[in-house]
Amino acid sequence: MERLEFDYERGIGDYGSDSYYLRGVDMTGERHSFDISEKSFEDGRGLWSENDYNLFAKVTYLPHTSTLMTLEFMTELDTAGAELYPPSPELPNDWESFSIQINDTVYTLPVPLAAFLDDGWVISEEDAGLSLAGAVGPNASYEWEWISLTNDREQVVSICVFNTTESTISVAESTVGGIHVIYGNYDFSGTELRIPCGLMLGWSTREDVLKLYGQPNDSFEATYRTDTGAI
Image 1 (spheres, rainbow, N blue to C red):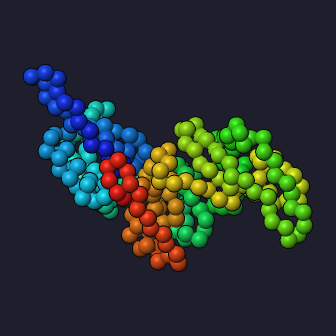
Image 2: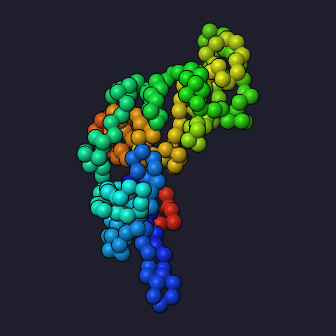
Image 3: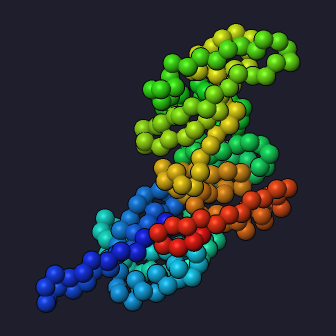
């Protein structure tokens, strides 16, 4: 699991005992909550804090229960875990392919917005009535807009759509040229969103990216403060 949370409840009265919980999201995006021991709670919180709140938990549990059988905290995803969930064979290994896997479907940009709509994505109400003007000349820039799409899992993506024609068209007839999803968008985790080489949102590390894609031409680093500390 990733996006770990450590929580506890104090017992009530003289005979009540404290309860300790580990919560997180698994590689398929499903959320879990488990009862854990006080020692596991303290050990996990300590590792969590030492690693700038980046920590994974490898668990086995009784199906359909919150009863843990084994628990192991890890600072990085092990190879065996990653191999349990291979990417779609349609997802290229070339990052310059401009491909992305969302749930079980691979899209390669540019792609007609109709491909998303055919897969069940719905344009947001505020964007559904938009139209895009056509290019006014052969060297003119394409008209574009950022819009939001939602699927039946209530996942949301922001996409940049273009009009590549010389005529005014509805947004539903446009072409997708960009997709924007950030880590803070908790609609996605693990196998729900992958990019070439199988990198997964929330699971793949900076080191994974550098190993597979090479050093960037430009980079940006910053520190921001949360309720639990600086990251």
